[in-house]
Image (cartoon, rainbow, N blue to C red; front, side, top):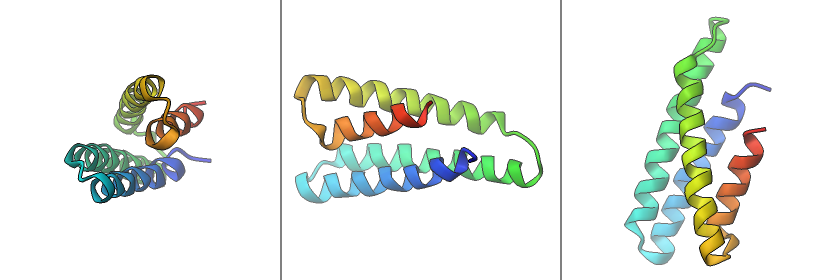
Length: 101
């Protein structure tokens, strides 16, 4: 399977999660973080899709996906170890770590 098959839905999931965090707790930080990371991942997925259609590789998309994934795994992994709460930190860190394989 190609990277954009995971990256675009994951970006949408992050945007939705940030919105839910805002609606439940009033956290503007959750909304902003989810929206920025999600939109960047959707952009990277789109770039990868367009490169795939031309039978090329988009190295910019790969680097962008990797940097965002590493940052999310690090930040949410640290948050999970501090709070021991699976939602949302453990879930996001776990999903991202599994997609990196």
